[in-house]
Image 1: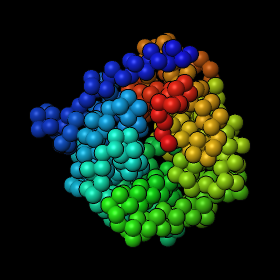
Image 2 (image 1 turned 90 degrees about the vertical axis):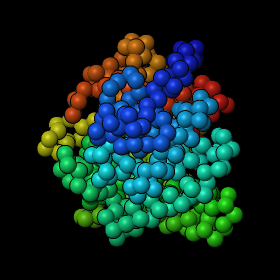
Image 3 (image 1 turned 30 degrees about the vertical axis):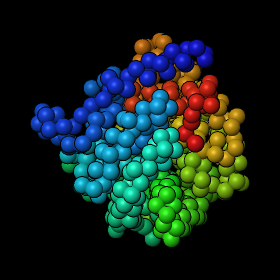
Length: 406
């Protein structure tokens, strides 16, 4: 399979320049909902599909890791410029650069991209600008009155999307639209994905202030990270697993999801909790990687009978996060095995269909993505974070010396 992965990885490498889009004045004049950005960017779908033609928030963070694996820091620098520009203009990284996304953000992963970019390129010119923008988004948006909760953790909230009910729009800010894990209303919960990403943001801010030789500011951000990590452990851990916590009803939502493994990626889980999460991996694993949930759950949303973020669907970003988290805690064999299973599934499916896909059936060996239950739309072929997974997870499985998410 190594040769087949290398061939697909080389094909993915050839897509990046082809997939570049622009939101310059000409493009924005042609598409009235597109918001202008200063630098070219890789769309979430790539040229393989007309869907997802805008620049998304968390999709881009995973795409960045694929680009860095292919030594395309030039494109990543433009991505960072665009997202810093969004914070400076709108107060947060938007869900996407569309006028109808001005009411919400997505999981805050820009800091992780910045840290990876500096680590891979050595380019520290953006440090001061990045520190100012990341701090503003963290304090004013994510810790602002609409998002802050009495638990000391952030909730998801949308300021008034024109085309979604309020609870669905808030769920869209978590990135996991749609899922059963928030019990039908993400506004009542303090999402694991969101809050672990904020822990990571605070830790990166501490690193940036160290680079700026500002130790007091660095220590302040380190303390914020530790306080939030402790709050996640206090509210979301329930003896054997990390669950979403419903702050309105003071209970855990009884849905087990791979979002729990973000606590490894962010360094939130204790060693004992990490060991318990590793013991639970078989509940999520299929021949092709990790499913979004341990089983199918009833939809809490009356509009949908099928939910795309649940069993048997496996998504590239969740594999990437889980692999990075397992490696961070020393579970290298588990990390390599999951990376290999998912990349092998991508290679096989690409050979059969000629495409990479938005999500995969990781449970039923041989099933095509188009066989997955339909929610809002049929599963679509795409590049984006699926292409990034080929680059990042393929290196973890078959060429670990060439780079990973750590």
